Image (cartoon, rainbow, N blue to C red; front, side):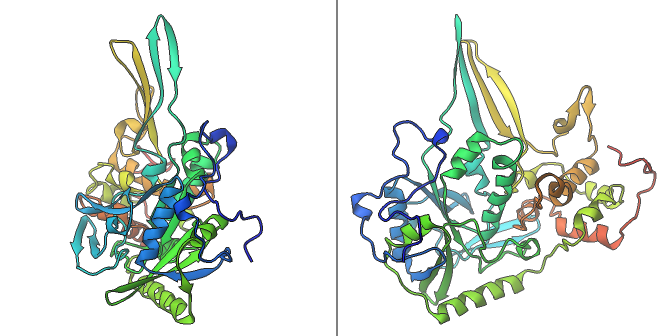
Length: 424
């Protein structure tokens, strides 16, 4: 039986009417080339097995149905989000070697498509771009304002890691469900199709098991894929998370999932979890950081920190931004929003000077917000354990070690600190 409420033969982004561009058919209708249905009984919660040809067809189905298909690609020596038109665009045979301050990509020559962890680019940038124009104005006697379309072509992500799906859920709470909603972010997210790729090869910097965001996929996906390799032959266990995912899978050639397939997935995830050597003990962590604002560890890490902001740029949940206006001599005015970092001195500038003038106070602000006060604001942690901030820190600062150091000497106070509270 098809899941109640599904519509056979069509699927697509579910976007509020107010965000739908005029003249666009919504949701996208399956093209004539993709109308073939292999299994009309696919339902939410079902699972099946496909091969690489099935992934190729999945990308084609989504592309021909109006989606901008994007996935992991090799670019500039790293795994990065990029456009994909088929399996040939995915990073077959690649592995990543990561450590504090270290990232290298190697090609092993096999056919595994998802045998890597995460690269420096997260899916955040696809929904919350590093720079975007908010409005444009022309001054020519009168002032004429124009705003860019909130909703570009709907996006389908092929192969988002479970930690990255969790990161999007965190951003949703901030930018889509919070008090200050971002209509541009919401428009992109509401229309997105997500196919998660469960992780069997975590990096040495990963600690998603501590944060409950991996290596298996829980929620937030339309389809979740597990790559079950057997030498050079790859097969993929696909689990259905939504009616939209069920509709897509019904148009692919599949075989029934067996007990052996589920056991292979279980073993893959068990190996991945066991391979992670880093951890953060989250029980009582917000309170631990809140009562240690004058801990000497903040000064110790500041002696190494360059305040470069790399950790905030690669973080898939950091959302700080800055808005600036530019004016040309011809009367053109553009207001743009760009990512910002709490490590910038101007980030806390108020009437005459920065509130957080020292590197120690800026690092403390970033870490305590990520792991402590984020809970107060949004009811969740701001960290999903991807380890990007560790790998891409030029001096290899490891937030899991910083937290552990504070925990080991809970209550310590740096010399000369004020009992009234932290100093900038």
